[in-house]
Length: 119
Image (tube, rainbow, N blue to C red; front, side):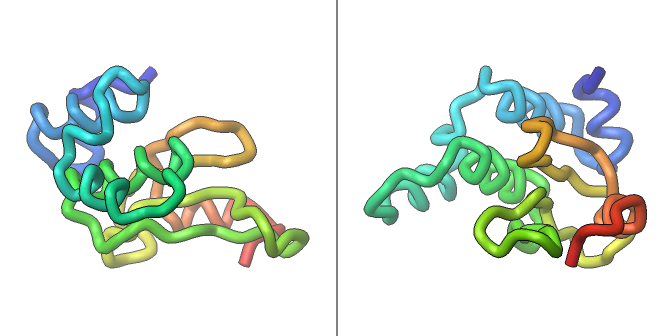
């Protein structure tokens, strides 16, 4: 089970930031409390999906380099996951699985190595 302490330790971030991230993951913290995410929503004609908004807010709080998709070899219409780019394939990050609808603490390299169906 994820806790603010586990997130803070894994990502080497402040516990207060980790608590906000966990709240965003769980839906108990509104993504629009992150000003950059509120601005993104205002700029969109159609509101992005909840997972996209949550990942955007988490990226801002982590000070990441944006969110990127992981695609299946079998589909070009829906990514299997989305992660916060932290600058290196094996840096700790947060990943959202569209297949299981869960957030994970992992690194992109390990996630991809365990799967044989991604590009």
